[in-house]
Each structure stands twice: as C-alpha cells, then as structure tokens.
Image (cartoon, rainbow, N blue to C red; front, top):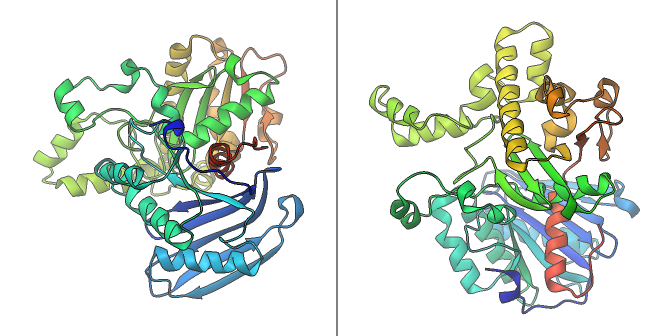
Length: 419
C-alpha cells in the first residue's frame, strides 16, 4: 500500500507528535516541521504496574534543555498513558487540540509487504496491521494500542503509520526470499522484511549529505548498532539488502539476540536438550548475543572488562566484531562500489573500539579509520576515515523521531519539511 492510496488528510499546522508505543512504555516527541526543531519530549514507563513514571521535558529554543517534570503514579494502560501525555502537553500550551498540530506519526514495527510508504491510518490499515501480529507479536499489538488511543483522543487529527519495514521493501526478490518451499513461504508470509528502516533511511541520506552528494549517487553500508543491531546495503538511496529477516532475530550479534545461527540448532535443543519452542525462543531472543556470551549486554561494561584482561569479555567482543566484518564484506560485494560506511545508534555512535575493530584489516577494500578522529567524541555527523580515503567512514547520529515526523508531515501537508 502506498501513501497515495490513503492520503485523504490535509493539515495547516506544522507540528507533528511522534509516538512510539511499547508493551509497557510510551515514548513521544513533539516537533515543529517548519524548522525541524523539537518542542517537547518524554517517556511513560512501567504502564500497568503499581507505580508508573512519566518524564516530560519542555525544550527551549533550538532544542536546548528547558523545564522537566517527573511524576510517579499508577497508569493503568496506554489510554491513560496518552491522556497523561496530552495533559502535560496541554499544560505547556501544546495540547492535542492545538490547531498547530498537523498529525500524529506512529512508529509501527511491521508493515509486511503491503505497506511500502508512510500511510494515513483508517480501519483497513488497522486491520492489516493487526493481521501482521503473528509475525510481530511483541511489537504490533502495542503499536495498535497507541494508534487507537490517539484516534479516540482527537478523531479529527490525521494519524500516520511509519513502518520499520517500509525502507526495506525495495529489496529484490533474490534478497528477500528464503530458499524454502515457495507455497509454504507465501502461505505463512515467510520472507525477509528487515527492521530499523527509519534509521537506515535517515542515516543513509545524512551520510550522502555529509559527503556533499546527492543520495541518488551514493552507495552506503549502514551499521545500526544498539542493543538491537542491523546492517543495510543502500544503493542510490534504495535499500537492496539488510541483515534482519522475518523477525529482528536474524543477522548481527546483538545485546541479547543471537543473530545468525544454524536453524538446526533449534531442532537440536528441542530433541536433545528437551527445551520447548517457547524456551528456545526466549534463549535466542533474550538470553543470547553479548549477554549470553559474557553476561553483559552493555558494550561499555564489556570494553571495561576487556581492558582489564577478561578473556570471556574479549571473546564476546571478538565474535561481535567478526560478525560485523562478515556483513561489511558481504554488502561490499552486493553493492559492487561503496562510497561510505556509516556507524549509528548507541554502540555505533559511541564505541570507538567497535568501529576500529569492524574495519581492521579491511584496508584492501579502502576501509580504515583515523585513530585520532575515531577517538574524538562529538554529537554531530562526522568523518573518521583518513584524509583521501577511497571509502568514507562516518559516524552519523540517528534520528528516527525526526524521520518519522518528516515522513508524516510530507504525507499530510503540501509544504516540505525542513530537517
């Protein structure tokens, strides 16, 4: 489904409220797309628990920290959570009824093959998102709760879904298909979808801008390295390959997820270890990755242990870096020509040792980092490759909320958004 088939909304305001609904949390940001500035940001945690927590920050001019408010009280569900958020925004003169609010943009994790672009939400769209719950049981139900609550609070306000999977729907069939029986795959929607799409879209475009080039002319490998981690190969602004698959479990070593394993490991654990399917699911998604390898999933702690001579942490770090190298090499081959390698997200933006290890020994591919540039800390997009390097290596802070707001505003307003 493309945006054009559902774009029946229009707006005169320039503000967009971005909502990211998790199973027990609600993150939000209010942005003004006239200049791309942030007006307010916040988080509701522990929804449904005895004591919930709402943290709200009103930002000063230019997005600088302003006044913050925190309150702890029971918040029963997402309906109550969003009502609390609306009250905080209203107290700052920016409520959901404000004529300056153009739309609400919702992060939706799984859009399947149908949703290839941001989409104005109606009942048919909601039904399709619900139909995809079996392939995103941890995420789509929470996303749906956020959407329905927002609709009820202001039925006249356009609601837009921006899908994590949409950026990857451009993958060719030979990249998206698994080599299993076609009928079985089609009947059960088994294929590679990819995730973190808003981040990969934003970072690949920002990398081209950093190089002073048109994104349509640039080939980029993006490494989104957080607790969840994924890689993408982007040719001229279009994704042609990504590491996550049917679910976010495939691909790189992550904080608690295993990434790539031989599928027969599952059969072996079922038959030999006597583990249930649910136990294996929990093992691979929540007890594996860096956590399973060394007991920590925080890269800062792992590096501290490595520096102190901890062999277990060193092995975990080496496995993590080895998987990164494999994907860099593979995506270099897929693209044929690489103009830039971009690191982003919590680990990618902040861990100089990870960036150094990922490109170590890849000089023959034109990949290297300058030690001084790599070690320097900054909050802005920057190059860390040596001057004159054949392939630029960049650190590009991701901004998924801005990307969601940009896509949402582009759909509901005739005026272009500024980044």
